[in-house]
Image 1 (cartoon, rainbow, N blue to C red):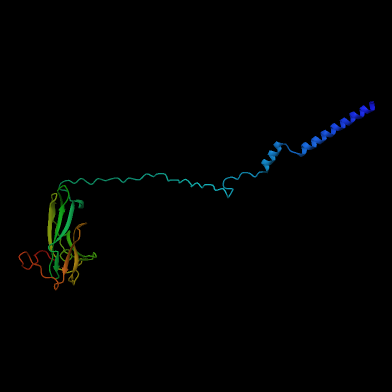
Image 2 (cartoon, rainbow, N blue to C red):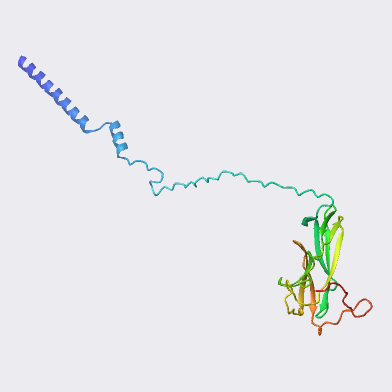
Length: 240
């Protein structure tokens, strides 16, 4: 009996040892739930960053426009015009010049009469030289080619200091012989043929607006007549 009891105890111990060994081997072969989750997380590919996956379209943000800093705009100093005292010389800004033809149309061979007008358009009486040395009439083609001036062949040193009241005018008349001319009056002078031309009056740097007039062919235009029907004759005056 003693021997039988010892054998049963030994068999029981061996059975316990076998069970422990089997359980340890099973636990080492099959991972736990936490281990399985960790392994799955490590095995899954990482989430691509924006721009790494060509299938994922990342919106393109336009670069911010860098506006240049505002710069200060220089302001030009406004210089008030000089105060004009009565009796001072008339500046160009207070005068106006214009030309007047006595007829809108002439015939080649006529001697057109031109009137030069200078007007004080300012508010104060002032004075200015309007003598024959500085006041001139010019004839130009429509293409602005200079043909004649009253100072070319009849230059003058005459000065005429005129005191202009506001709105006052000074008029001077000259007669054109219909011949071309140039400074210092080179010869020979050629007659100006039929066509349309401009009269321009100049005082110093002041120039009038062009006044058009016509020179007609004598065979094509009847002689002009005055109000009484008499043939019009040129008026005497300075010629050039």
